[in-house]
Length: 208
Image (cartoon, rainbow, N blue to C red; front, side, top):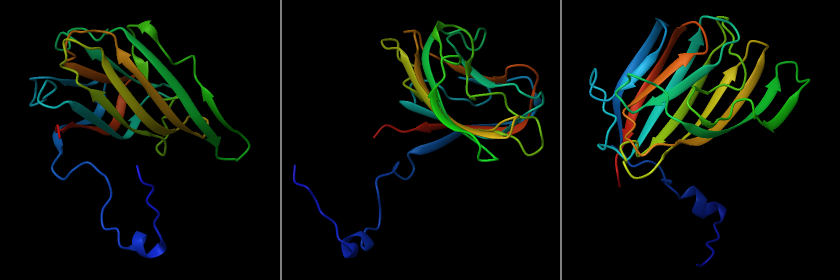
């Protein structure tokens, strides 16, 4: 493959870059928290689509604010339309961390928030969220081919939060739901207490 070398003139002439094609990202459902114990997306319920219509689904979490200080935001999958959220998962988690006072910074794997065939909820935040009015979490998560009855269900997410101790956590996780049953529901909740406010949007990404 030939190496293409760009100069300043050629870069200035570029008018577009690789991206999701126009119209490929389809908004399916928006849920807005209001002292909500859970936010759940269940296929076939309340106009939610989470089946073989799309090969990839994307969740956008916007300014998730929890009611109880130092609690983590979590998610889990269901294979029975939300009757149980207990899919076995094997996952990873690592965090980039920096505090407001510029006295601490790190990049490290977090073995306290990974799962090894665990059926519990997966944490989306590297530490407990703050419940102050200026503290929240935002994230995006991708779920790949959840309707497959052949393969396990891969996911990945990235989240950013300002924590209860005034640290920013830039958190990354990837893993899989170890089931060949179709995943037809996803639930988000705080470790304890309610989600006070915030928005989660579910999108489908069309096959090319």
